[in-house]
Amino acid sequence: MVLAAKVFRVNEEIDLKSIARKLQNYHVEEEYGEGEKLVTEIIDLDLTSESLTGTYLKDSVIYINRRGEKTPAIITLEAPFKFSKYKDKLLLTVIGKKNWANQVANELSKIIFITIGGIVEAKISPETLRRYHEENPESTKVIFFDNIDIPNINKLSLYGEDLKNTSLYTQYLSHGTIWYIVATSKKSGYVMGITRNCVITAFSKISQYDLLKFIEEEIYPLID
Image (tube, rainbow, N blue to C red; front, side, top):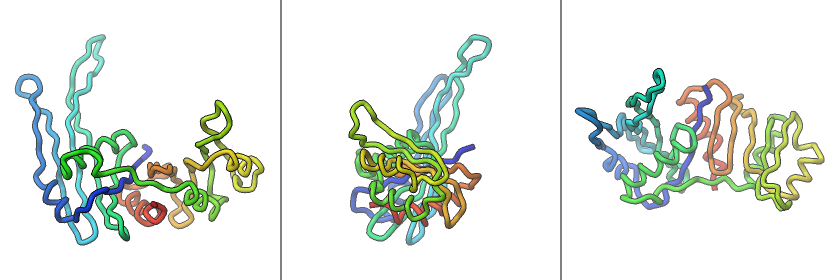
């Protein structure tokens, strides 16, 4: 199963101890049906001098088709997260696909800062993502370009083993910027998808721990 994560930036002045204090014992219950409750909570908080880890849990109702009838069932969605100090930044990594990670980041922002916007998307500049590719071009398998200046063309893509040395690569760069790459990490050997808004997708078999380690070692230095 593909493992994904997204990195965010804390946009307000706050320290890890204050974040931990606001998240500690967070538990909200919502009545659902007869005797049922939907629970949202944060568990397993672990604070160190450089990071704060935890898991965001949220109950949700889905409907299962059983012989033509829709039967409700409660499932629990889970999102491990980690706040990390990196140079002058405070970054948040949420394990989960993009939309779920976005939702969790907004919910954490509301808990910590009362409103959304306290936690925002982290960004990698087009120039930095281009440099990341060109420093190890033989490892890149896929490149998507956006901000295309050709009318009626929104995105361009290249697939192959030697993307830097194709005339199309140079041509596409003259018409747009790199939005997404899939490349093999020279350091770890993992095959990773990376977007400029810091959605990281692991195409190699990897644990959550190793995905976080990869992000801290190879993605955090790319963030503006």
